[in-house]
Amino acid sequence: MQKEQIADILKNPKKQQIIAESDFHFQKGQDALKKWLDMKISDGLKTQLLELSKDYDQIQEEAKTNQEIKTVLEHLFEIISYCDSKAKDKLIYNQYEDKRCLAMAFVRMNNWVEHLILFKLNPTQLKVGSTKNAFNYLLDPGNNATILSENHRELIIKNLSKKEFDSVNFVNDLKSLFREFNISVKNPLNYTDLLS
Image (tube, rainbow, N blue to C red; front, top):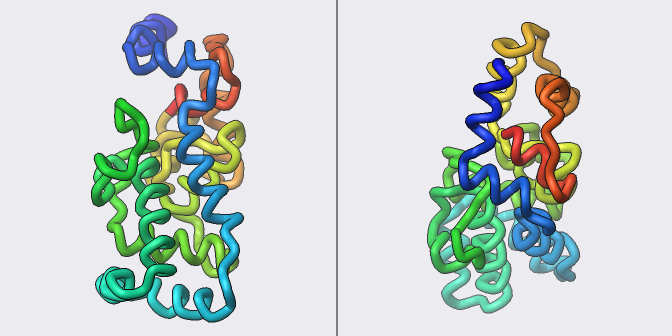
């Protein structure tokens, strides 16, 4: 990458917003995810959610008559609205004026819902991938990135650094690609979002 190319990219108004922002750029998404992870859920509801998580149509049907499930599902939709630009009802649930979200993730709503339920209730069952990368980013943005797809991450590392891809070290490898450009942001939690 050329220094001039990077300088031109950083002139983009969206990039300038990230650079100048004093708050974490996705604070509302982080707050929503933390609220979900901290939410008290009875054993009965936990069992029900784990069963329904694999059937997106059924969980929506249950939400019509079960207030607990409706509350959970609406909360999950809010989290998803901050993660994926194509999220169902993003315009309703995303509280940002500019409707910002982490990525155009190309993840189906049924997978988002199932994976959010697993992330809270049975995290060892959730494999590495776009959804888990999104959740990890929201919880720890300084050590994760908004490049959610493992395939995209691999392509970036192989093509730009000529290194072998290692999912665990991706963010460090990404940061090292840009270190020579001395890019700074007002809030360090926004740095990897800027790089993404």
